[in-house]
Image (cartoon, rainbow, N blue to C red; front, side):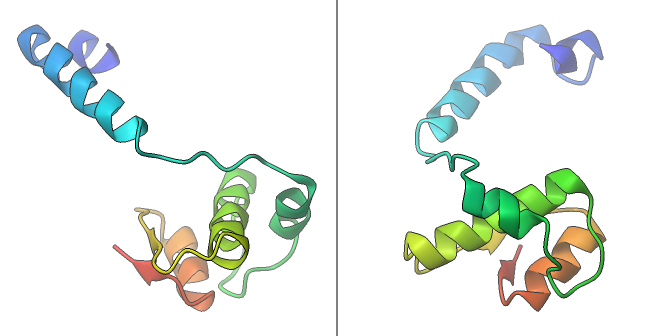
Length: 94
């Protein structure tokens, strides 16, 4: 684990952290990058320019909101550009 190698996590804690991560991952529903998402990622989002990967994340979030009819989606990002665009799209921010 990279965090152990960087001495940010003790080896004795790494297994527990990996177990918790695996438990979270099992609850997530991946969104395939379908042609509609790829096309939407190339369009403006209303909050200024974003990088390619960020555009894919925003377009995927929109897909989840609109087609999968999720009632609540909260965007989590430390990047101000992502946050600005998510807010412009009406998403909740954490």
